[in-house]
Image 1: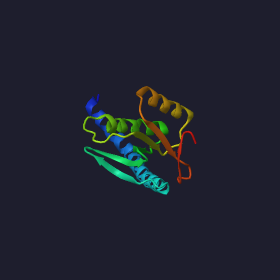
Image 2 (image 1 turned 90 degrees about the vertical axis):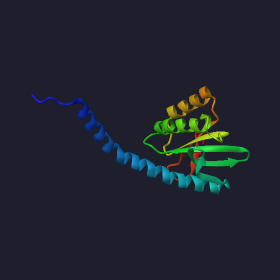
Image 3 (image 1 turned 120 degrees about the vertical axis):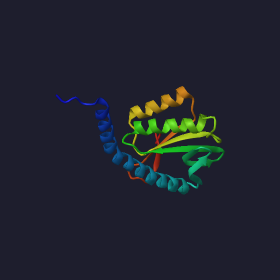
Image 4 (image 1 turned 180 degrees about the vertical axis):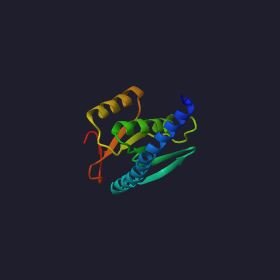
Length: 153
């Protein structure tokens, strides 16, 4: 009778999982890079000067901009769902805002999603904002990929 090494099976499963996830990750990175360019162009059409891949000490923020006196840090995500976009962005925004070595926290934290939010996503976002008392906003890219809309639009 063949006795299987549990560690070897785990390694094979892990390698298989990595091979399966790699194309998804590459697609996500490409989608976010393209969305970042469209977001910068959208801000420029509104006469808002922005910085992409802005450095703050250890951190590289996707897009930063100032509108009036409000300094905004935007984290762009384009995964398979709005929920995943929020999950991925919120951790990074908290790091930019609260980590002791962060040099310039934002007056506003902005999640920019590549997915159209569902009702539950909007409710969840409001709960995060209220319970964590964060200056959090949310935009999502329109279906035509030519505009960014707030959940109030």
